[in-house]
Picture 1 (cartoon, one colour):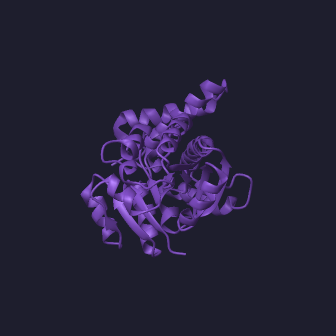
Picture 2 (tube, helix red, strand yellow):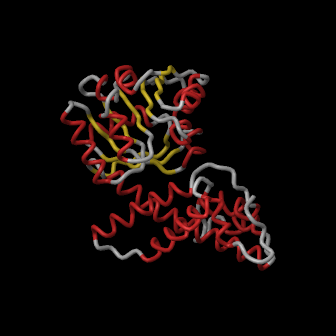
Picture 3 (tube, one colour):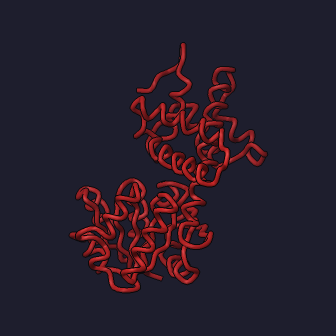
Amino acid sequence: MTVTVSLIGAGAMGGAIGTRLAQTGQALTVFDLDADKVAALVAEGATAAESGAAAGAASPNVITSLNSPGIVERAVFGPGGVAEGAAPGTLIIDMSSIDPDATKDLAAQAAEKGLRWVDSPLSGGAPKALIGELTLMCGGAEADVEDAKTVLSHVASNITRMGDVGAGQTTKLINQVLCGLNFMAVAEATQLALDAGVDAEKIPTALKGGRADSAILQEYMPRFATKDYRRTGRIDNMVKDLNGAQDLARRTHTSMPLTALAAEVHRMLTAAGLGGEDQAALMEFFKGPNKEHFQ
């Protein structure tokens, strides 16, 4: 079924979501402050909106894909924002990865204006978005999440309602803890294999189906081994998410020593100027004598 949807935010992740929606024939309107990013989606068949308000007026479904709660709030509720043009009952689907408490505050603001809110952070990154195989963890009223699925099913193969608003964002933080630790483990194991003279590129095949197997092992060990640093994500985004997990852990009095270590390594790489690089650049943490350095 073809859906009408507006997209606010056409960065690396939003751009991939928009590309998939456009390529599957959805009626897509897009707004972003970066005209080049909008133009890229227009080339795929989307329609450009002059403002967030115009985008909100264009569709009963609005996806936001932005970097922080403050940016989401300005895009939706600020001057010229989505809420100015959106009709009552418009469904806001926030696919950003932001703090669960901030999400609850945003949803409350939306309710005051007669708008509905579903938080739907994702796992799988741009590559999975482009082939419609994202994993989504949603928070919101049951009926709202069901309505959101009519849009999200075009970009995702696994959609789970985790509870009320904010539950999706909490689940995403848990996802990022697992990913952050797994990235570190696979990078460390890759360096050991390289130093020991084992062909690290063969290890994912050798371990496939075993207890050590994972999507990160299969995708990233070959990339770690060959220093394939092409960008499909950002280290500094992982810092943001692990910071969020640590903030939540402080509120829940949960001890998370391994998460703290992973966060520190990611912060170190960001401080060294690698924050904009892909997770593959974690291999830079293992630089040493006779090691190939980042170019």
